[in-house]
Image (cartoon, rainbow, N blue to C red; front, side, top):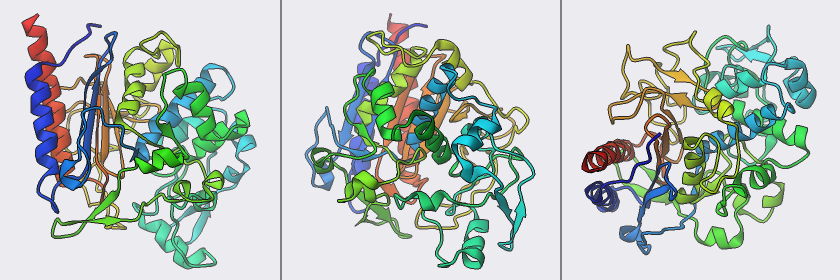
Length: 419
């Protein structure tokens, strides 16, 4: 695989896109940040954070801390696959998973009216990594709200961002192995990692992923110094105006942070440039630029292999806004890739081409705070575009992401032609 640099023009264009997006308070994109990485000896090709217009100092080498939300799922899947490599976890062993997580035994499936039926199949780690276990999210699936009203003693809806494990003790919304349903599966994958290793999930990530990659600013429990660098989170109203809001995941930032549940689905805080080191490792088939081995090449290849060929249109479904303050309604998980273009899901993330110039087997996912990553191993380029805005799928951030990704591909193409 050839290593690329980013043309000076592309870097200037991306910087301009970020700076323009961050202006226009109170309707812009506060604290937008981007990192772009490649496969060369210096993997970081570009980093920029545009924060000046929101009362923060703009600095090229920004180390601001973001809530990365569901970008966490990528790191949890890496942890799981390390343990699969070591024959400590097994992808298709329901007995092992139930032994580690007895909460998954005899689960019930909630119906439209909130009543429950027995699960007819057992859950495996592969199902958790591919979101086919049957778990949902309460802010995406109305069945869980119906269940809360009918069956929970306190009649309170689940809150997957409470920092308490009780909120992932949920019924299923589909039969295991029946279909794709985005939800708390990766939280349970993280629980399996904790119980098989005897370590908190964040501690496992620190020892086996972050230290080998030279990462200092990714964590489930930000230190006081990191909290001082934490970017605030913003809420956009129906008129498009922004206002500061309290963090959705706040327990890791409070006095009892040590007791907070380590969410494998949404628990990481960190800087965009540090997350870029995760992406660069995947581009290099599981190695850091200094040669540290995090995953075997065959494992990385497996993670980028479609596991859901039997569900070719799994991502082309209407996403309801059960909690409109958290998620905009959407026609699909990745609308820029319309039918009949094939899409897939690997071991932890979506696999899809797109209109920006990315390759067919590009991995991608996102976070509720409007953070979007992609990893194109075929072309040797990856990146993260992050903000801190709710609801998810903010049109201005999506436009920024698409614009930046397009400029990246234009930039590496122009640079390769110059050579």
